[in-house]
Image (cartoon, rainbow, N blue to C red; front, side, top):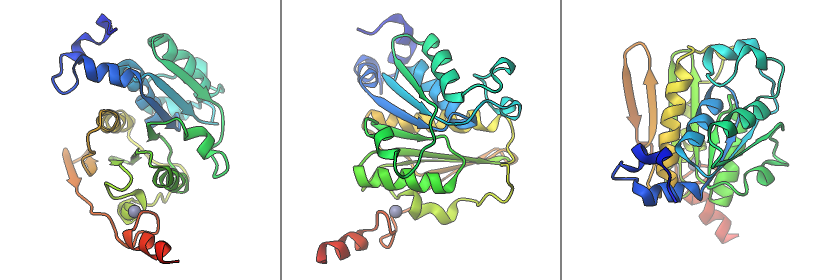
Length: 246
Ligand SMILES: [Zn+2]
């Protein structure tokens, strides 16, 4: 039963009541609860995705506040994941929000994402993204990469076997030179919102739209349609054929 809460959203012809009801059955796992992950989790809770896990072992720091909108000064020193659970659950009691104050590792990632229909990248770590990518391709779970650096943001929905994977596009991703990633405060909100759009599309069974790059200074959105790399060590077709021959 759809309540008035989503009325304006169900008026969208591509969504409708059926789409809204479908979203209510879906589970999204957000890895990272900082600038990107907190915005994404916030939007997905409001849009009515039925179950949302947020995983982050970090605490809220004063330097997080310029690029987030859920945390306040009172939250400094507290677990990001647990604050997000508490605050976002109160935004929408009709969905399930669960925070995990936990570090994601190669050993525990499967237990953390096994129920996910889509995994959301809220990390700022290439090794962690490669871990998400591996588990996604291995278990056929779509995920949505997002990254911000200075004044440039990137988003790409990855659908195993249908789109290129993160390793296919890894050479396009800027390597972080600084110990702390420099970022304009407003940028994660924009990029997380686009990340949520790609997530909703995946949850509704639609295909993602390539690697989107947004540059603040020239007011420009570019979308690169990157083909799957047949030699990709993670999703490459040739790799699979080689394995089959063994
Ligand atoms: Zn690949």
